[in-house]
Image (cartoon, rainbow, N blue to C red; front, side):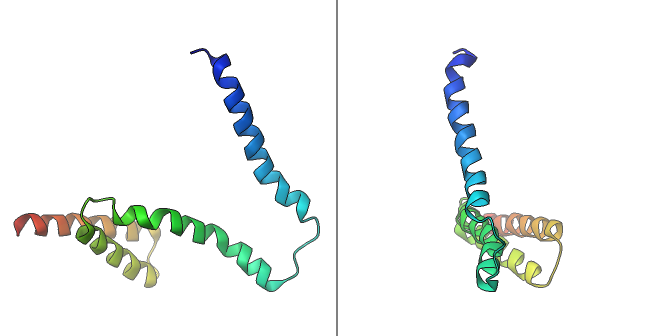
Length: 105
């Protein structure tokens, strides 16, 4: 296929992306004064990211037990205020250790 066949798809994708980003800017011209609305809009990206990634985390290893070990370690370390790199590396090591233990059993 030539690039001309993909041009309508890219154009539609660009328009949709532009509209998604531009509509809130045009709809909310005045500053939002409600503290509830501001806090709600502040936490939406975190909630969406968590809802998108958490189910995949549980099924990423193929075994729910090893994934649960990684989740427990990640939640504990993040609750203790560790950095993202520390949490990610420790969770990966916990999954690897859990898989190693299950292979021995």
